[in-house]
Amino acid sequence: MSNHLSWLESGVIGAMQGVAELFPISSLGHSVLIPAWVGGSWSRDLDVRSTESPYLAFIVGLHVATAIALLVYFWRDWVRIAKGFGRSVARREIGDDTDAKLAWLLILGTIPVGLVGLVGEHEVRMHLSRPIPAALFLALNGLVLLAVEQLGKVASDPTEYVDERISGPESDARVAKLSFPKGIGIAAAQILALAPGISRSGVTMVAGLLRGLSREDAARFSFLLATPVILAAGALKIGDLTGPLGDGIRPQVLFGSVLSGVGAYLSVRFLTKYFAHRSLRPFGVYCLVAGVVSVVWFSVR
Image 1 (cartoon, rainbow, N blue to C red):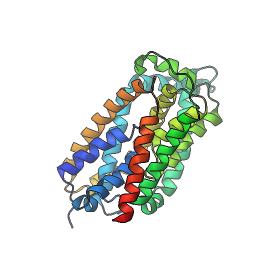
Image 2: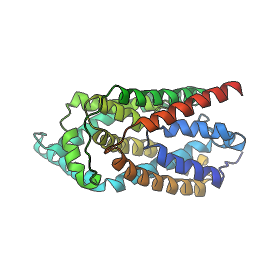
Image 3: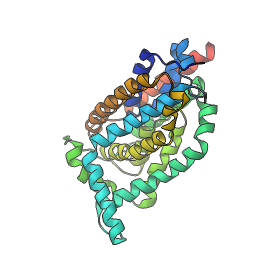
Image 4: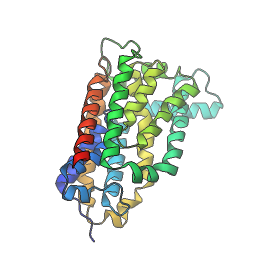
């Protein structure tokens, strides 16, 4: 049976991936729920649980595009962080080098989710990537976002916005004050996002807020943490695109990936400004409502 992925499917899911990966609303959850809501050929073509589905190869391309968009947006910061890492290796110490400390926080913070993802991603996807579990986790994601705001666990945010690509060193200096256990603990929260419906950016932001970071700093740390994780997840499975799963759908994959990359770039540009002085509540309300409505709908169908 030949692979099939329509241009409309690739365009809608591609644009959604770029936005939902960075907005705290779970791209994986939406990748499960959107095809289920539409039904018909969408539910057949976009089956994330099937190892024979070209949808997995498609998602690989979208992840790589999202990671590239993040690298492009934060390229100055990544160059600075890489130089800090190089200095720490050459000197065999971190000292008071903020960029070196942040580099090691990002490296060590990526290890837990990477290991768990390698071992358990397949099992989690096979058992939880169905409409009702995804909807339940989406509702839970919303409750967590609302709870952290309600509890008042948010540090004071700046009243004026400065472009993150300029203010990055100041934000990174604040993040680098985290101890390694705290920083790695925030990063390890990404493990929860293996469950469809739990947002990677949302759960790491919540963990950062609970550790005293401002929304702006928590969001920035979340985006930097997401880059190597998303890129590695895509790179490990990039062979799917060149193998049988990619046959017949590579133009659609390219189309969806371009939309995903553009969506991710625009999203990170918007969110770095948004979180300078606004809350997670709108995203929490959306996830809670969408999750509950989906649970009810798929329960009675």
